[in-house]
Length: 522
Image (tube, rainbow, N blue to C red; front, side, top):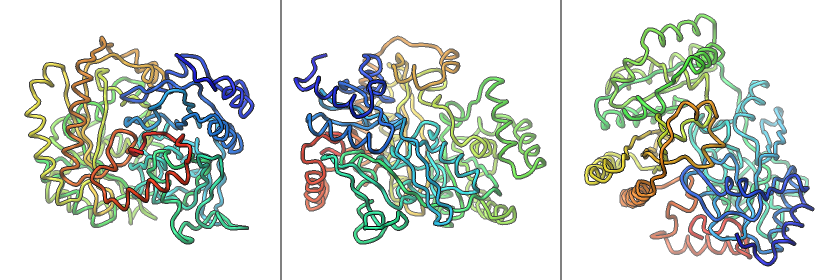
């Protein structure tokens, strides 16, 4: 690797900012931070691990002075080149030491540093009987709050991660500290987002192209201990989608997700091993509102086993919280009425497990037999969902010979986000060698149970080709995206005035063009 001419002074400045122990220059460390779930980018010169907002600011200033590109890595679960460098000579900021949590229960807000994981925040708030409205993606053991605000996330709780945001402290490409909303005023307190134009919104979903997240303030609400779960099977995609659409309009579920047969029966539906089953049982009991309900849930799981899950062509799972058990039962009863009109109710094994274990280890970054895995997704308005599904099924059929030749297979996950948006998430699996990402991110005990595969650049190239074809298909149906990174196109075909405004904002906040160059297509 050839270092840029200014590398020695840059490294010295990074050491001065965070200390020698927190500037990683080992080749393996730098290669790991240059690799995500699917891809690898330019290897950074160094990885800086600031331990405070002041140190984070000093790192950005050092990079701005040297003209070194910056990317920021949170939990690392990106699959869209979100934190991968597109230029040589860059610095990756690892936020894993930015862990401060300040809970203000009286004002119903919590302020965290960017490296706090959703699981860490969940546990800290749980002890106080509180939660954030959106409280994390499935990958929340690793996923950070700074990363989710940068990428936008969905899964647990209500809406998109950005909708739980109040104020944010951002470090610009010049090293300046910018505070949004009420926090940006003299004597201001971080409690209200919409004080003047919504500057916080600029930095949600920006993939780090407009600023480095330092501190994030989120809304708090009371935690609801009472909950009920329901699951349904559907014989067709159309029936599943219609049920999900109608339930979404009711706005009574706290979590929903659908799975096709591949995911239901394989990667997500399967839980192997005595240790895994014991951990599931323990967490189901811990999440239950009473000993009786916990025993009842376990009994249902033991009796039903995998039969109904294996039989489902499509399955959808719901969780509904309540201020008391009666409210939770009333919500789930309404969900059951709609679901049963379009499908069949089945044992609520999967959502019960999710409630007990909301954040799982990153074992699902590999397939059920150790295959390589990469998802993609689009958000669609409901009136375009079924036509997209038909077009995608036709695309898989047209590419069946190439997929079979390389051992490539697909699955899909679905979610209603509010009443108006539907997430369709196709996933690819193929036999291929694991990367340093998997070796470091997936628990060693799980890796030891999986077969290993020889490298297959041909299969990987086919997956990459089909990914881009499917993205084109998504856009042909009016699709939008979270986690845009450097993969999903944002600027092509957009309104010219909005592109001009975005470029002007980028130039004002990042005049040296060092903040994640290439993200958002900028």
